[in-house]
Every structure is written in structure tokens, then in C-alpha cells.
Image 1 (cartoon, rainbow over the protein chains, first blue to last red):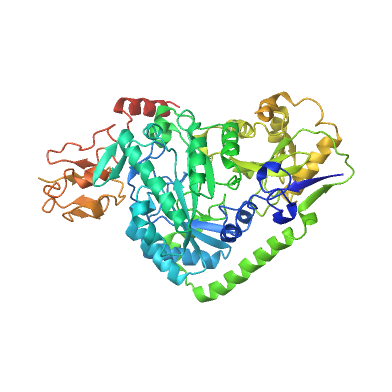
Image 2: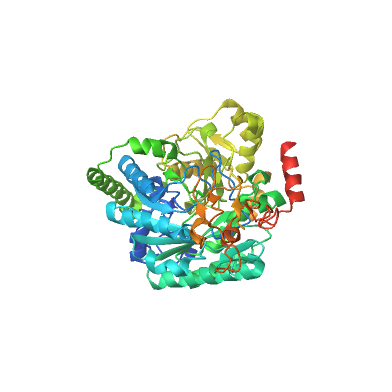
Length: 502
Length: 92
């Protein structure tokens, strides 16, 4: 008998006994290393908890258009409804409009627990708009968690103001701690009434980021650090960044891939700077994660995203629609409380007793079988429930004799929603298959005849037999089948070798 | 003399709070500078504030109608490189 541990479902880490770090690789969820007070703050935050993100929703409001620095991966001219990219929005809101929108969404989507301000510029370069929004929400909607994301340049100056509001999480984007590296990422910063270019500007930015991080930690505010992985620029350096920010008390470090295409008109896009491959990203994330392996489900949301991670219901809440809604927030809060309690009870139930969190592989002798990566099409809820052709992203799981582990998600089509301008269907399918490189199985609710054949030809086995089943159980079941049929004892299929050796 | 904002402005608000003369107006289709109020920051700052934070090359002109931030000066993308990239995209 072997048992498959499902990481992220076994919250009873204390029963693990003696194993305090993730390095033991046997039990413990992504959050078990956290002090209880931090765990309490993040357990229902969809961005921080792999598990919570299936159940709780978040939204961003675009109230902060101005920015005080330039990043080479950003183009302030860009605003396209087809884009799905951080820093890109279609509708700028005033603080009053934003508050109205947040309360409308909170009433309509009671699972919404978190409101973030992330742009489209830098929230702290727009202090009046950002803080007015926070001030009103702290007062009118005390059941919503607030968070803010910043480049850090203005952070030390506003830390005390930030602490006045209902904010317990701040995200700082830190791409470097070395001005030499910084000069290749940030062409200028605006500081003390001057535009300062090159290394000198990068040095100021780095100093302010580090100071801001220290000040927040001193005041007991949770700090997450985001980094954009730019191959050849800061990829190696991010290991150093990771050490530094963790030493200073950041509670997690989220490494995200560079998004750069010439048509975005960004410096990196135009200059042909490539983004990392899925393998490169995973390797660096593994290196930087340490005990903080909690952000693999990060979706790099737009600055006006609404809904569960990976979905965007913003269209339902445009300002003209929000203005028409009559929101009774007192009544909504009662409903929200009930919904949150129900979700928490459900999560609690899933965690009760380690046995329920384990998938038991009956009838299988313990043997040496190699790990397998599987891609899953899911529209949420933690189950295999999406048609292959509808998947905009795939969740990647690694199954091994010891556990089933969520490792990352991969977006199929980062920018384009398809259509006439995006090439023919065949190219799109080929692109999906490239995205799934390294995976041996793809689990989905249904799949068409043509993609089935192409996937098989590419060495990826489509599987629609586990529709509506919980993902981890489905992955475990397929792994067991593969093991039973002797597929996991021999050599790796050729197209997958590199993946697992790396 | 006065600076002016032209149509490539993206209405990002960065300049508006910085102006020591309150000469910048939120207007549509793009922000405007009131030429009667603008002092080009003379006596207040060494550098013109709006043009020092503006992220868009060419969006702010000086009193002679010249771009304060000419192409390539802020993004580091030379006009030639940008033209090449655009030609490559069009040819797809």
C-alpha cells in the first residue's frame, strides 16, 4: 500500500511530528510553516493560498493611473480590452466610483474577500486616490481585506498612512538588489522632483524598496515580494534577492515570468528580450520558494480583475452597470458572513483527520516509479471540469509515489483570445501542445477528436475519464493506472526526458 | 513661455499634482496646460515638473514646440529600432 499525500490539503501539519521544513517532502501543506497569526491572515486570501483560491475571490480597482518609475516591461500607452496583463486596464475609476464598485461586487459575489489596488500605475504614486479608497472601504465595508501592490519608491514616505487602514498585506515588486542589474530594468525614476536615469535611479529605487520592506515588517504588516524573471538580466540574481528579502522578513517571494512581445511596445518586447520557458521558471521558483512555496497559482491578474483567480468577471461590473445597482450592504454583509462560514466549514471538513486528506492507492506495492507531470483543465472548484478546447490555462500537477503536488499553472494564450487575426486553429493547437511540454497526460472534462490525435502524436495522453472528480484524486488515479500498466518503470518518453532531469 | 500637452497624452494624472502653478487641467481628450498660468517651473524647480514625470515621449512640448522628451529618451528604444519592430509586426 502506498498513500499519496496531497500537499495543500493536509492542514494538520502539527501531526506531522518533527518535520518542520518543506525539505522533508512527506507531509505538510504550503502554509504549515507559517506562524499561526500569519496563517490566520492568509488562509482565506485567494492569492496566498492555493486552496483558498478555488473558493474565495478577489478584485482589483483601477484608481491609481500615475507612476513614478519606468520599467522596461511596461508601456504606459497600452490599454487594450483584449490584453490580460498587469498594469493594463480599460476603465479608470475615481475613489467614489471604486468604493461603489467594490460594494456592488461584494454583494453580488459574496466569496469576494479581498480588494487590492495595484494600478494601473503605482498606487503609492497616487496617494490621495489610493488612500481615499482605502479610508472609505475600511469604514463602509469592514469585512473586506485590503491590500496594495507597489514598486516601493514612495513606500517609506507613506508607511504610517498605510497602517491606518484595514491593510494587512503589501506586495512590493523587487526585481533586483544591485543597481547594475537595476539599470537594465528601470530606465528612470522620478525622485525629489527630478527624473533620475540609469544606475543612479535604480540605486534610489532599491534603497527605498528595502527601507519600505523593513518598515512594514517592523510594524507587523505582511509583505510579499514579487519579482519578474527576465532571462539574462536578473534570473541568477533573483536567488540573491530571495535571500535578502526573506532575511528582512518578507513572508513570501513570488517569481513571475516576464511577459514581452514586440506588439506591446515595451522596451523588452521591441528589443526581443525573451521570457523564461516553463521549465526555467519552475526551476527558479523551486530555488526561491524555500519554505514559501505558496504562489504557484499566481495568475498575474490585470489591475481591474474581478472574481476567482483565472477568471475575470469585470464585464459584469462596469461603472454604468454598477450605477444601476441598488446595494444594501448591511444585508449583503449578513449573506457574506454566512457564505464565508460555509466555505470555511467545508475547508475544515476537508482537513479533518489526515486520512481524509490522503488518497489511498490500494493494491499497489511500494515500488520505484518515476514522477509524472500532468496538465489539468479546470474552471475552478478544485475539480476536473473544463473542455480541453475552452481551457485558457492548465494546472500542472506532479504525481510521484509519495504525493500529488500542484507545481504551476501554464497559460495557453497569454494575450489573444483567438479570432481572425490570430492565425488558424492548427497553429493555436500547436501552441497549446508546446505549452504542455513535459506533461505526459492532460485531464479534462471533454476533448475533440482532432486535438486528441495531435496530443497523442506529441506523446501527451488525453484523458476525459475523470470529469467532475477532485483534481488530486483524478491525478492520483491516473498515476496509479500508469504505474499498474508498467509505464513508469522503464525509460522516459523521449520528449519528456529533459523536463525531469532538469 | 509655456509648455503644452499634445494628443499623445494618456491622461495618467502623474503631472497634475506636481505643477507648482496649478496650470494643468484635467480635460478631454487629453490633459491641457493653461498657458496663462504655466511658468515652466521657473523659480520653483530646476526641471519642469510635468515633463520630468511624463512617461510618454513627445507628449509635452516646450515653448518652441519641441518635444521636451524626444523619441527614445525615456524608453531607451531608439526611433529606428521602434520603426524596425513596427515594420516586422506589420509584415506578419
